[in-house]
Length: 135
Image (cartoon, rainbow, N blue to C red; front, side):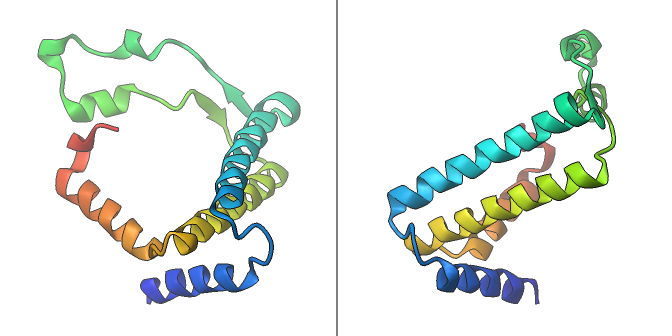
């Protein structure tokens, strides 16, 4: 069922994209949508204030190498974000991520790639390597 949703989404994107069918247009729109996501997250911190940034140095919390355990390391590192998104910021960020997915699907269409297949390959890689992918 999930593959049907992905395929339907990708087909709907293909049908609804009238302008910007050039790969160059799609790539620049995808990059622009990335910037809009970054801007929306930044605004939740700077303008709204529903999120706060705690930029303490993460390395200070990392145990010595001989004590290094991947699970312990995962628990020591943080996102630097404090608080929860307000409803307005959540809506804006969701909308921007949706736009990003639209242009990502458009790029897949123009390159004759299946978005679901790309997702499955990445999922399999993560599932196989687990925490050892170290991204």
